[in-house]
Image (cartoon, rainbow, N blue to C red; front, side, top):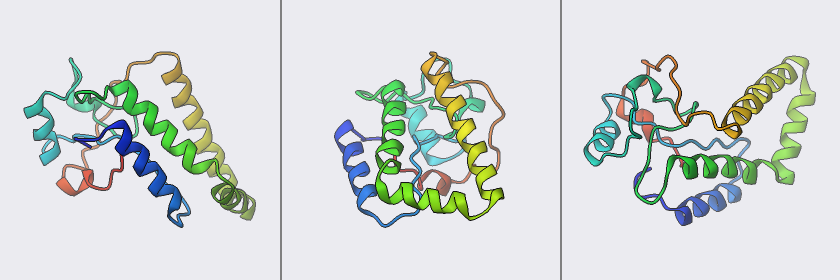
Amino acid sequence: MPGETEETIQETIAYAKQLPLDIALFHVAAPYPGTPFFFEVVKNGWFRPGTRWEQVDMDKGTVLDYPGLSAERLLYWQKRAFREWAFRPGPMLTYLKMLLSDWSTMKSALSVGWQHLHWQAMMDEGAPIARSYPANPGCARAECIFDLIV
């Protein structure tokens, strides 16, 4: 979110690791068109040059460049947050128990894992930070942006 620094992101990660959560997701804020956050991003010039509205999707990268915190750094911290939270004994045991509970859960987890690895490979190969893909028209309300951590 605006005002984040690498230090505040590290504090968020540490806080999330202290909570008794079964799952934690970390996203870069997405300025969906029509939301107050969208207008704040436009006003402050935080969109990456050449950004189109259909590129705004918190699950597909970022279109933001904050002063002092580039899109590349935001994505680095997003990945690091998940890794630091998930690769601890508690969450790993929870995942393992969940995976072994039934075959449909295992198939879903493998599908999600494959999608994540594919996304990670694209990012590691230097794919654009934000790519063109269909927009999420169902999230044009202001409250859609406030459940984001990073």
